[in-house]
Image (cartoon, rainbow, N blue to C red; front, side, top):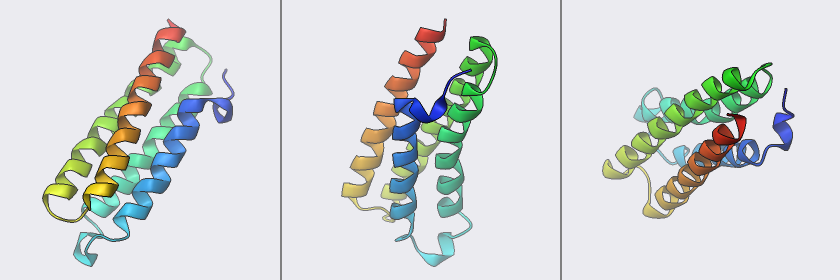
Length: 116
């Protein structure tokens, strides 16, 4: 069992959630149940899966939850790119979020390797 609150990747994922919530506040109201909701759920699932996996008893289980976190990272990346293409997200927000996604992805891969 790992202390997830001490994991750097979990802390970075929490920062990403804050960034996403801040960015989607500026989306059109008619996106409330579309991309806004999807991006909020997706971003919160990243640190949630890291935390849940850390609470498991085996590295294999932890790895499985890290895989789910990576899947959510790719999903959020796609939604971020789509939001920018649709004109909902300024380039500055997009760049920050994409950079955070990339960094968390690399950190997650590193953590997965350390568990094997």
